[in-house]
Length: 220
Length: 111
Image (cartoon, rainbow over all chains, first blue to last red; front, side, top):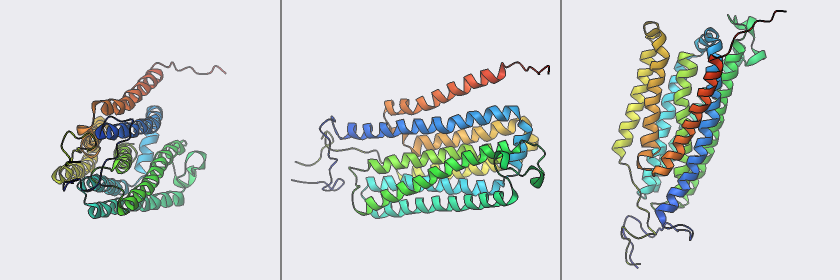
């Protein structure tokens, strides 16, 4: 019974209905990709709705975008990109059986998610304070809106960033779960599919923000 | 078990991307984010091109994330097709909605 240095005593535990370890791995990932398709379609539908209403009221959307602080969105973009980077390297650390480094990378990812949410909180609090609320709740006279239907823009703003923020929170929970399991020694160079799946989810969250940032903050 | 050989069906042979690739991709993503902001400051000069420029940069960033961070470059063909399906159906949704909006005839009420 010999074990080589790269795989240690860990094994992939191939279930009997799979041909081999790599088929088992790719099948697991396929399920995650299918879930990612539902994510693309869910956010995609809101993007299409945005496009339709933007087509109908381009000036109102421009006014809405001007009322957002692009610096906040910009910092959040950098934070999310960095967190995607740390998520990606955590997987390569686990693959190389460097669990300690992986735990640090996963912890940094959760921290970045928290920073993102704190910045988001300040943005929301500021808007609530000004009366920039969605739909009929928007204080048209108070904010001095040029367009009476500016609430429509903020309906999209809160819907899109809120749904995205919910994904960030869920992602933070899932990454924490991966981090605890990595500390327990559940993941190693032969088994890390849960981390890979959570990683794909986190990258999707980043991907959606990459489009939300120019859409809401810059172009309008 | 006489050692793990490359054709052992119970052993996974993962593709481990080197750290340098992740650093390069992260660097490119940061640079493109700065580029988005720089382009934003020339919005007046860009005019109608402002939005396409911002979205093309976003598209480049998205493809970098998908290719390298999400490991689509090293994934199986079937997984790539599965993911592409999401975007294909999104394009269908967009196409028919755009078609609908563009072909509507404005009618004002005679009342």
